[in-house]
Image (cartoon, rainbow, N blue to C red):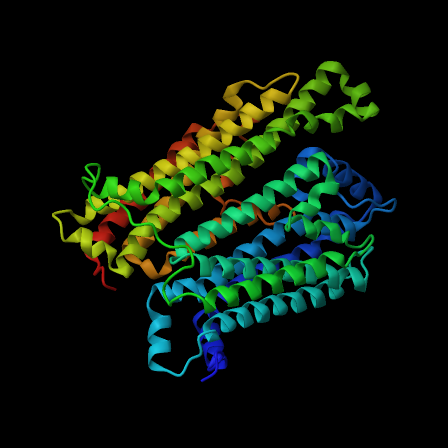
Length: 536
């Protein structure tokens, strides 16, 4: 039997298992990407529209989000499209590939399926890993083809065939390369949680390096693998060198993954698990147990978002420079008017950051709440259930910890932003602007966690709907006006209802309504969790 025996069958099984995930992600990623492309001509088709958005994109705040605008003496619609979409879609592609990579390897081993398949069938040692690699390659290749053909048909003003296919391939290969990185982490750790966490820590580091270097010195952005995608200079220079770097890095990670997989036991990781204490006086119930198992992850989240917030806050001094550099605006508004306009720009940017931080907070808290179901599937919850501990106590524990962690993550990110921003601004903003934003986001965070709790209680197999709705809320908030969605469409996002904070004060009637709705969802979750069979 060869090392790669039965790879084809495993690949087909992987594709069948992930078909729903693949179809949904492909429709969202490729479909929305092309929908925005078709709309862009109407939005930024005239020279005046292009010049207006170009001035905005040149600000340090926008560079921290999207990367620097391509240097060209003849800006056009296609260049603006590539500048606005490249980084965000690269992030989505990385998330998609991480989900597929860890799910096809470490998650399968952790559940015992890989051992069962290899033990009862003539499956080669490296076949499951190769099947995962082929799955990622096929899916990213399909995205590249769909996006490339779609961009050709969109016929954006200023676009060319070389640039269209470079843009499509750049997004496909950045996802594929990070997917190969995730496969390496899947060999290093013996559980999907740590493999995924380590992968996102690596990704977060590349994002921070990209953001900081883009704002300070773009030449150093080459240090970040995520930043390579910006160096393509699509529709301007059409630089294919980053594609070579991604391919070389991806194949290097692939080789490392194969080497590590060949030198470890099934269901084990290269990094040995350190045995903990046999007993602890601190362990007195599900709450202390959850804290012990989640304290490292929680600390990583809190520190990580603080650094992210501080990184964004460090560019606040340059946000208002767009107003200062316009003689017309200065003459029309006067000194006090210019200062007010500067302040409005900063407040609007804080509002955008509030939404981004809230999404991260929901992910952090939601992962904790989700543990009650994943632990149940692995049989861990049965060990806790052997003690006189009720279902309500178990569920209440993860909700309290998850909600508390989400709120702390949001507060940490806002605190980092405030400290860094006020350190660099000549006229620091009052603290209430930052914390008003945090307060406004709290019920939205709890609403999304409440939705997850309700699904855990009644439809645990549909828990991923929460992440889908979170992504939809972000897309609506970010691209809603761009796609000219109707008012009712914009209202589908919970962020819409408190979108004016901190420019305006919190609408407390809406705030309380969302909070009550979150509480109702949590109660519904408790009812369902007490009624359902936990083994189903």
